[in-house]
Image 1 (cartoon, rainbow, N blue to C red):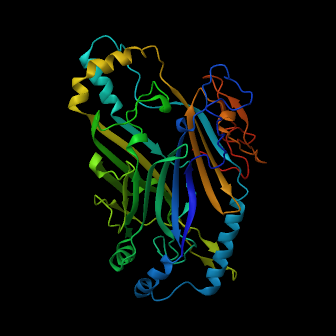
Image 2 (image 1 turned 135 degrees about the vertical axis):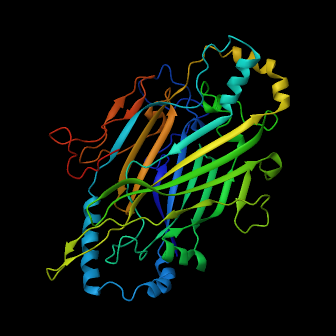
Image 3 (image 1 turned 30 degrees about the vertical axis):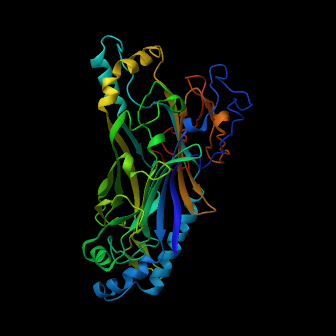
Length: 442
């Protein structure tokens, strides 16, 4: 049975979204109330990254592993190491929230001297709006590539449970993007893991709604006020999602390797109007007869090396051991397009419309990143939320309970009095050493 563990949520996973009443501002006092606009959920960026695990993968690898190894780990030693590992996991559960926050610009660059010229400036402006890139990352290595430690070596694939990932982008209740892929487990792919320590992924599902995508990327407008994407004005829409898998480990010679790139994957698909279904959405599902285009995920990665961890066993003998393989996955979403000849020919009308908005400043976005350990579900969760600086935390319903060690404080932002999660990384008495039970940050 396939088990899904939510590891990285760029979402309001620790929050509750306040639902507006007929577009009116939700009740409540907060800094920046005079300048704040009515809350619109579509203006809040939400991203989910779900890391999949499958406990059946070790069974699939077992037959091949028996051909490579003459024996498995001694039962008594395995039990000792398992006790050590469970103890480490129990200690990790006491870690408090690590959080960073601040204001960040988003979208295309603001156009200086916007009205100095005509056609050339309009062209430069539109070209900038035809590109959007978003990077999603983890604060620290918290994932386990394997479910248990090993006494066989750093690249022992035993207990490998990594089974791909999923990326979801939402705006309010509307889904913008969904990408889901899993580990290839056919016989050739499994033998590639055993013989070459490399694995591949297969694409299961891809969903993309052009109407509410991030193009055109106009940073002078909140999303709900932007011009919506249309194939009448834009063409050659292209979606690309890149995933980089990195890891840090220490080997038996006490050599430390930090943030080493192990593999890269990408999905790239041109999206045309004729590729959309009746709902105006591009949708691909593996094995479906309704697919209008073949899509695949390209790339490969080495399995995650286990860190060396020698111990004395229950009999006082020193035993070599290797950990469960921590790793990070960074995703980049890139959307690009071009303008249509009809839109370019009608540029003067669009230019006049933009001139009316020339006094608009660059929209500021406040961003909050928080990483916590969910002891009930036994998982690390990283949550990222981005919202216009004219909103306050109470508008969005951002609620995070204070943790015992360190915890979260309320800090007022500079732009519009935005409430942001403060506290940052808790320090020890010397101002440098993290307090006990507090995971170090970036």
